[in-house]
Image 1 (spheres, helix red, strand yellow):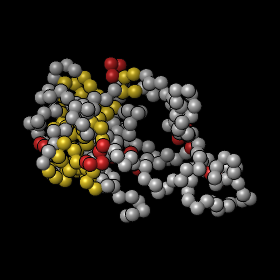
Image 2 (spheres, one colour):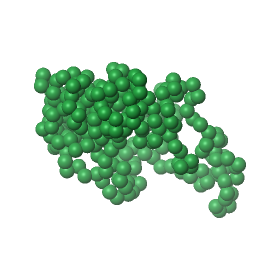
Image 3 (cartoon, helix red, strand yellow):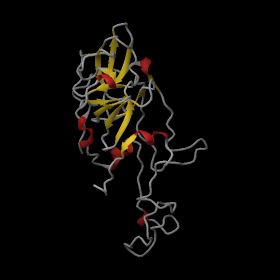
Amino acid sequence: MTVVDYGALSKNNPMRSATINIKRNFGRNNLGRITVRHKGGGVKRLYRMIDFKQNKYDVPGTIEAMEYDPYRSAFIMRVSYADGDKRYHLAYNKARVGDTIVTSEQAPLKDGNRLPLSKIPVGYPVHNVEIQPGRGGQIIRSAGSSTQILAHDGKYAHLKMPSGEVRKVLLGNLATTGQVSNQEYSLTVIGKAGRKRWMGVRPTVRGAAMNPVDHPYGGGEGRQPRGTKRPKDVWGNVIGGPKTRRKKKWSNRLIIKRRVGKRSK
């Protein structure tokens, strides 16, 4: 079992003004029926409201504390602005208490500052990128992730995603320079079943271990072959190949190059 090093985090209590209790439904719908399997239990969590917009223009902010957020893989930072306002932001890599950040069209090209994509040079890594103007960062928010600006073309910037996908984003949209914090998160080894239960993940049973009434792979004496031409889920739907993305999704026109699947590499 391995854990992330939390030694760089501050020993502060979370800001009361930026925390709320969220009722957890554990994969149930409004009727209480299970719609997503293998969810349930887990330790109690307090949700931190993160300012993904960072729309305080030309007002410098100082990092007061680096904190842990149970609802996300990245660390967060408590930022105190010059006008007295305090907010939570996604922490960037190598962020330190006392560093200054700012959102501005004339902001210097320094990790943690937020600028329009048109002001960031080609080849620079960014994160917390807006897809639609004013909506706040919607992509590239998980631990250790970043996207690279490949080109400025007309009114769009071409971004290379961690998946290998290349897509167009409006040049006026805001992005934070640098990489998201907690790069070591991907190296975590869970180590035991109990730790998964703390995370709210219930056990998953193999289809081959079930009875025929419960799964298309069930039944047989001893270890049996699958018995179906194509892989199926517990409800008999064909999986492992069919495209799941909607053919008429609005953002299809913004994708220059689709991500490369594991099988086609």
